[in-house]
Image 1 (cartoon, rainbow, N blue to C red):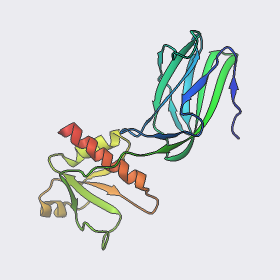
Image 2 (image 1 turned 135 degrees about the vertical axis):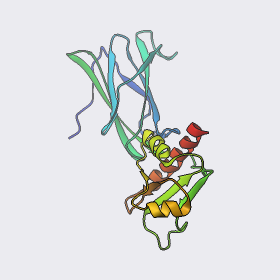
Image 3 (image 1 turned 90 degrees about the horizontal axis):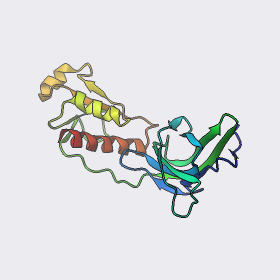
Length: 205
């Protein structure tokens, strides 16, 4: 059961972005910006969206249209999924005075994935006669380095010979990176992989 909202008069917690029902687009890191205000003598606890929690805040002066009793707060959070989301912002002034605000909003991804230069698919490049495991190489970058950068942006892949060292020898490559797809893989997850490969290119030039 969802806990009810509360907002002690001495805290005056407010969420500016997202507004109720607002549509927010993720940035290149898959995150959204969240901000609001609260009383300057109160403090933020966290902002959460299901299991994803943000607890690092930047505190600044209040917006021009807000009185001097307030401060602004900002944070960023990677939503657990696209579509309908609900965040919970929490603040406190002391153990007996707290605030809890719920906000429903929609997350979209408007960043088009780009073509990745230097990407080579190992094996058939069409979905005919192949399974959902796709091995690939990125020119000039070792597969283990590709996997490490992808892991840093939340994309899980495997790197190595994949029990097929003779095949790697046949193609003259040290190893490959392998991404696995199945019926439950979403287009958003595929786009995240492509953006992750863009990040690999930025790291290794």
